[in-house]
Amino acid sequence: MTSQRVLTCTSGLFLSLFFLAAGAAAQPTAPPKPGPEHEQLKYFVGKWTTEGEMKASPFMPAGKFSSSDNCELFNGGFYVVCRSDGKNPVGAMHDMGILGYDAMKKLYSYYGISNQMPNADVSEGKKESDAWVYIAMMDDMSGKKIQGRYTITNLTPTGYTSKFETAPEGSKDWTLVMEGKSTRVGAAPMKPAETKKDSEGPKKSL
Image: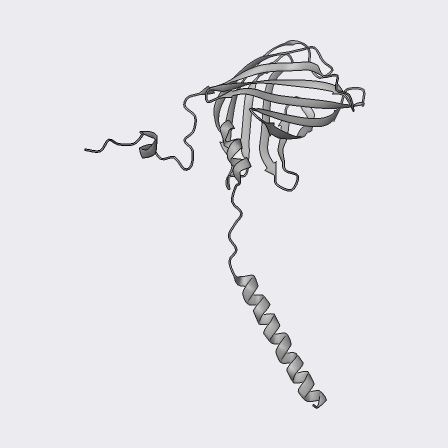
């Protein structure tokens, strides 16, 4: 076989592979869909009122706090975005938090910002039975590393309770910093698979 023939065959094979790859790349791929963990997060979708008490800590003086919270499902169904406005012992507070799920780590995630804090709150958690537990590492006012643990319990269709605790890095000696109760405003949002007709119950046959 001459060198020209080899070159022609090689060029033809290359072009065939190129168009095959281009055709494969052009095939539309289905977007990922939310999993069962994302469905769990939909519990928080809706409007809430929260009331509670802060204990004296390096982060906040002691006193009552309250807020109005609005949580919405973000486009795509993978995240729940919550915005809160209220008051605490320091003054007016405006917070925003994003709830999600990391399928690689198999952990729930939270990213929150506040007008009263210079650093974002980044934590990871698990749903353990009927409780959500998030853990975060942070610095106290002296620059020492401490652990933060946020726990949500007593989940019902109308509300839940929560508490926030801190402990020195590597310690299990938790100190209560905050506890509160959130109450849903209005009815819980209808599940995606549920329709108005379904929610009315089965019709009686004649």
